[in-house]
Length: 113
Image 1 (cartoon, rainbow, N blue to C red):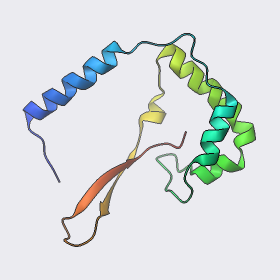
Image 2: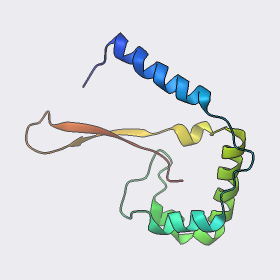
Image 3: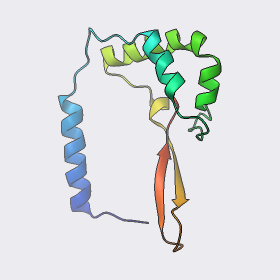
């Protein structure tokens, strides 16, 4: 496991906090259901679900029903600047890249939407 020193932590924290501070909600933002439906249609199949265990295949089966709901939710998130904590949760998984036992990488699987 890679460990970062305090200097690196402070550098990254400063950059993230600055970018977060400079962001502002967009009151005119609108996500259309057709855009959500298209995103669901072109999403890769056969991928693991995130913390919520929802896979793209699940969304594809109900895209006509769920696209307007998700579009409304995403529009509200853009307009208010608020992202529910449930969408920020992820599952960190270690993947072996082949060869040496130490040749691994970590990925974070986040909720599908």
